[in-house]
Length: 223
Image 1 (tube, helix red, strand yellow):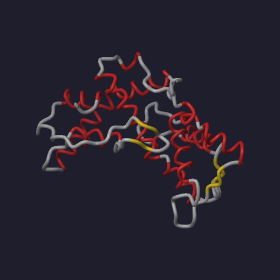
Image 2: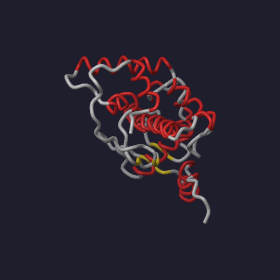
Image 3: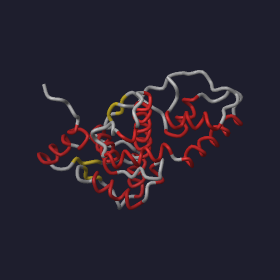
């Protein structure tokens, strides 16, 4: 039995086959709706593939921070599969499409962080092994740079302090992680496996040192 690598879904093989046989998927957003009238699952899958393969992760943590030129590259890739009614002619549709990238992009960043943490937990230097077949080593190195970035860790220290100031109960490690990288789910259609389900944990001590917090940010919550 051959080894399953998942490169078809990762690269949009099924979408390619459909387009070759039937033409592009027609995506229409009815007035007042943000969900396509048809092909909702296929569209979500396409967005996920584009994010994994084309979206910039260098120096940004949210889709809104991605440079416009890179967004245009992502949109162009998406339009290889989908004919979106109203694109470039209807601001409402333009905003819907942009919004469709927000949460999947954050989840993708979260997946990368969790992959990093798994390698650390296994005693493996994350910079020596790219854990995903749908990610180049060069792009994985960029993800490692971001996770290890001192400015990012300092921002998280500040965020943790704000959470403490605004709540009687101290934030848990999971709250800190979700504040930076978004919520986690076991499986996201179009994004694949690799995101751990959030589990309830005990709160952090009332005083968390910066060094300890940076450790939490760098490798994720302890198991």
